[in-house]
Length: 249
Ligand code: IPE
Ligand code: IPE
Ligand code: MG
Image (cartoon, rainbow, N blue to C red; front, side, top):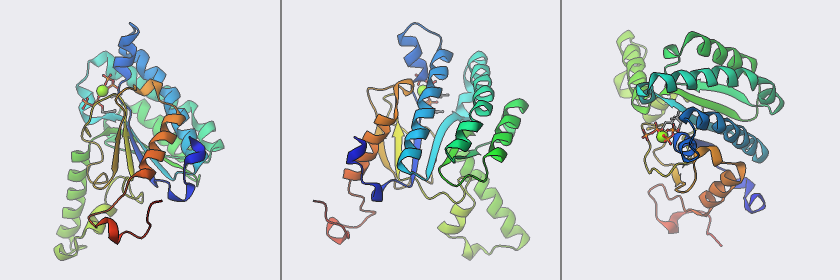
C-alpha cells in the first residue's frame, strides 16, 4: 500500500479520533482500561507511519472535555497511562525528530500529568519533523470560546479593531497554532461523528470512517490505506471539477 502513495500529495495535517478502545477490550472479556493500554501501540505505529512518509502534522484526540464524565476509575486509569507513556516516549520522539504539543484545557489535568506533558513538550521542542499534537481535555467548542475570549480582550484593549477580525486572524488564535487546517480526519470504531473535535479546523477535511476496526487494531498499514483513499478524492473547495488544475488519470 505504501508504494501506491503519491508522496507529493500527502495530507499536511492528519487528525485522528482514536475510538473503540473500550469495545475492543470488552470483546475479549477484559476491562475497558485494557483497551486504552493496547491503544498505545497503535499510537506509536501511527506516529512512525507519519514519520516514514513525511507527514508534517498529526493531531490525536486523546481525551475529550466530555470524557471527564466517565466513571472515576476509568478517568484515573487513563490519566495514569498518560503520565507513564508520555515520559517513556521522549527518547523515541527525539530519535524520530518528532515535536510534541498539546491542545486543550491542560490546567484541568492532574498536576503530575500536566508536569510530564510540559516536560516532554520542552524536551522535544527543537525537533523539526512531525508535529504530534495530543488533544487533551479538549473540545472544539471550548477552543472556539477560548479564541473568542482572546479576541474580545484584544478589541477591549484597543489592539485589534472589529473590522480587522478575519478568518485568518481567528485561525491565528486557535490552539493548533501554525498548523494548517486538517486535510484528512480518520475515525476508528464505527461511529460517524466528530464528537466535538477540531470544529473549525475540520471545515474542509476529508472524513475517513473505519467501520470494522477498533483503535487498538489500527496500524500504519491502515494509515497508508486512508492516505491512499484520500488521494483518490477530488477536493473541490466549492469549485467545479473543470476548474481544478490537475486532471485525474
Ligand atoms: C477511545 O475509546 C478512547 C477515549 C475516549 C479515551 P473509547 O474509550 O471511547 O472506546 P469505546 O468507544 O467505548 O469502545
Ligand atoms: C471521542 O471518543 C474522544 C476520543 C477519542 C478521545 P468518544 O468515545 O468519547 O466519543 P462519543 O462519546 O462516542 O461521541
Ligand atoms: Mg468511544
